[in-house]
Structures are given as C-alpha cells and as structure tokens.
Amino acid sequence: MTTYLLHGDSLHSPEMRHEIAEVVADPVTFLDHEGRRIIVVSPLEESIFATREDVIDEIWTVHELGWGELIKDESMSLYDLEAEMVLRALTRAGTASVAVPASFGLLVGDYLRARGIEVNVDADGWAERRRRKAPWELEGIERAQRATETAMLTAAHMLRGAEPTDKGTLRFEGEILTAEMIREAMSAQLVALGAESEEILVQSGDACMNGHDLGFGPILPDRSCIIDCFPRDRRTGVYTDMTRTFVPGVPSKELSALHEHCRAALDAALEGMKPGDDRAFRRVAEYFESHGYPTYLSHEGDSPLREGFSHGLGHGVGLEVHEPPAMGRRSMPLMAGEVVAVEPGLYFEGIGGVRLEDTVVVTDDGVERFTDPFSYDLQP
Image (cartoon, rainbow, N blue to C red; front, side, top):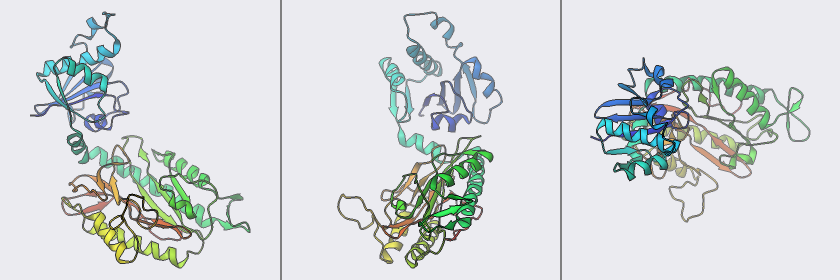
C-alpha cells in the first residue's frame, strides 16, 4: 500500500490544505499510511487537530520524535533538523517508500533519499486525491460563488448606468468609467462578502483579445466588455470562476452572433458532461467550426490561434483556480465529485470578444451549476 507524504504549511500547499482542512502557517508533516492519517506537529498546532477526527486519525508531536534533544545539537542546521523530523516520522510509521507531489521540497526529498528512503513523485496520484472535493470545499466554493454574483451585479450596474461622452468613452457618476474602477468596486464587494480577488479581468473592445491581461483604461460604448472574476473564499481558501460579457450600449450584429453561439456552446458542453466524459472540448469545437469559426481542433502549424475559439474549454477549480482536470486538446476524463469551470469564447479583432463561464460540480448523472442562475444577457 502506498504511503503518501506531505511536508509544509497549508497556506502555500493546496495538497496539504486539502488533506488537513485547516490553515497552518508553519510546516507540518502529513502521512497517509496503511489507512491511517497521521499529522506531525509542534505543540503550537496540536490543539488545532484535537477535534478533527474527520480528517486526522493520529497526532504526533515533534517532541515525541526527539526535537528537544536535536535542537541542542548546533552542528545540525535548522533545515536539516526539520528534514530529520520527517525521517523520524517515517521510521516510526515503519515505511521506507513514499509518494510525494511534484511540489515537494527538494531539500527534504534529498535528505530522505540520502538516508535510504525511496521518494517517488506521483503527480497524478496527488492530483486525483484533490479532484474529488470534500464537503467543506464545496461549501467554500458556494460562498465564493454567491460573492462573485453580487460583485458581477455591481459591475453590471456600473455599465448600465454609464452614459456615452463625445470622446468615445463612458461616464459613470461624473467620472470616465475604466476597467480599474470596475475592478476596484468588485473587489470591495467581494471582501465585504468574505471573498477576495485583486485580479479580476475587465477587458473592453479589442482588449478582449489579450488572454489573461487584466485590462486597463476606459470602457468603450457599444463594444463588448468581458469580466472574468475568480475569487477565493477567505474561510476555506477555495476558488470559484465566473465570466460574463456585457455591451454597454447597442451591440453589433457580429457581437450578438458571437454571444448567441457562445451561449449555445456552453449548453452543448454541459449537456454531455458526466463521469468518464472527455469530449466536452471537442463538442464545443465542432459546434463552433460548424458555424464557420476557427478552433484548435483543425488549426494547423505551430503558431498560436489568435481569433475564433482560441483556448481550452475549461479547467478544474478548487484550492487553486486552475487545477486538474484539463479540458482542451488533451482532455482528462471527468470524475464524480470534482468541480470544473467551463468557458467557451470567441474573439475577433475589430469586433471584440465574448466569453461565458460557469463553475459546476460533476455528479453521477451530469453536472450541477454553482451559479444561482445568473443572467447571460449581453446588455447589462
């Protein structure tokens, strides 16, 4: 039976946060050994897990493993002392072979290997452990989603209340409406509701072509404005991801057509999604190509696709905003219990872009939206 090993804090390690369900700022050691979930902590963290029988079976302290004596040995660096505690935990558990994630620390890994421990990087195994979300993660995503929807309504209100100027911009409450203003208002709304994000994408006009660029400057009238909001719930650290496209003013026929097809593509993706499915990207790409839009399904050569459906369909969402499974040209079969963001989009220079994105949980029978239901209307 594989022994799974983690060492680090749960602020920076999504693997650790998923396993122990608590915020721990100092490094701790986690073992999943022969069906026992063991955590090795200092006395400062011991009380955190005293009532967490749902995630931890045994608590060992570093003092049980000889920390008090080792700290007096000035010939041993503090870094090696920490690694020695991991080694002693493995010795106590009676294992000489462990599986670690790709992010496992090199110093500890080298220390263990030099002392006869077989350290195997099992990126797939650790990713699979995290793909099925725990109840507390699903609750956090739900809270983050409610906050996101309220923040998106704030953005829609600003766009709806803006008036065109004679300089080709928009004015809201006496100021030129900018991406920065919308981002600031949305960020404040998220914080008030227990979520946080300073990296909300607000892209207007041809800036919609700029991928993950945040978007800056004036919002343009009668042009598309893509707003992509992916905040984390502060209580649990889990994310959600949602995108809507608005046109403050009158959308062109071309933009309206892009929006209509993205809406249909989102439905096409979600309708076939269930455990084992890995064809959602292909279904969307085939739909777009049947209406004359370029996609990576038929794109030739090594140059990137700049227009049309120019990215993957989506990704997993959890303690990272982008995590397995991938949904693109190399899609992974879906699993029941995982959460994914689905985001078809179309982009053309001079016209702008449209992207619609919902976060859903995969069930035995299909998917369920976290979105409660939020309008897809092009005009705010």
